[in-house]
Image (cartoon, rainbow over all chains, first blue to last red):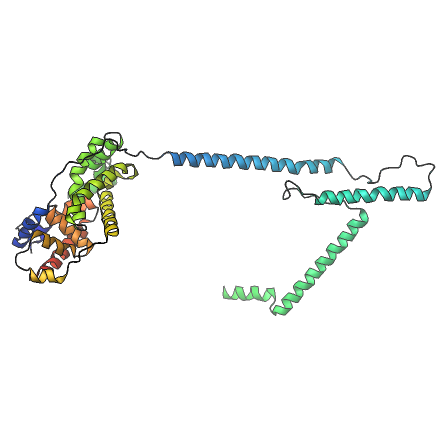
Amino acid sequence: MNDNYLWDRTGEPAQELQRLEELLSELHRQPQPLQIPNNIRIGQRRRVIPALAIAATLLIAVAIGIWLNLNHRSVSPPQQARNSQPVQPKTPAPKNAGSESLTATTQNQAKPNKPERHQMLARSFTPNKHPRSVIREPRLTAQEFAQKEQVVLALRMVSAKLNVAQRKTQGVSQTNIIRNQHKIG
Amino acid sequence: MIEAEATAEMLLMTQPFRSPEETEEPIEVTLVRAVLAGEPDRFARLYEIYAPLVHGILLARVPRDEVDDLTQEIFLHALKKLHTLRDAKAFGPWIAMIARNRAMDFHRSTRETVEVTEQIAITNAPNRTAKEVLDLIRSLPDAYRETLVLRFVEGMTGPEIASRTGLTPASVRVNLHRGVKLLRERMGVA
């Protein structure tokens, strides 16, 4: 078989291949003009999708900006309020102090405390528009603060003891693990 | 020697290097750009150049009486979707792929295929008609039958097949040789 003739019809023609060409040439395409309809629309590159993508990006950017702005505004007022009101006695000073007895004054001092404390707690549990951003700490008296500190200290001690117990139950200390890793590495 | 001089010029940068693609723009690139620029009549020239390719690809896969209509249909589809072609130089491989996909769709929709059996090869050995030989070619694997039809029916040379289908010349050469060998076996020619 002549390789060149099969490849590009150069060189000596092979009889068998020529016969095959002649035989199959009757199946050759009869030239027909392409009939292009008048109403055919040649599509242009779609510029809608990039435009939509840009618009969506801008919208998202604007939305993030607005959200951040609102968030900042919602956080700042309580801080200002807290800063503007330094530590003040929560009980209002009694106006008529002279004529009343000591028991009456203690009652007067005790009575307004309860509703204020109640309102404070209620305020802290009221639903907020931005619950994640606004953290209102309840105002504590000195005694309450000391109690809180004690509770926190106790919790830390318990946590430390639990850690020690956990290490003991696992049987391997952290230092050993690190040492072994060092050896392996 | 010329190659060595050219390489030396490139390395020394004595002359600006220009690749062959830059110097000679393929005709299909010009035509595709013209069509996209609003001259649909230029598509007729693309049709003239590539119709044998599409015809051959279809002839290797679908019944003969369907080929002409499908060829027209494929070119009209290509004209509508021409804007999706990213590289105008790849018009040939692109339309070849459309033709192959369309042939597959045709078989999916009809499901009426005529299997060429060994009986044809054995009973009608000496004087075969073109249709019988075509059926034998269609019984060959995809790569061989397409290349053989383009070579023997459409009269394209190996380099032409390579440039228009996007295959490498080496692949086309291998497909031609193995295809002819298989065809000879099936035709009962020693």
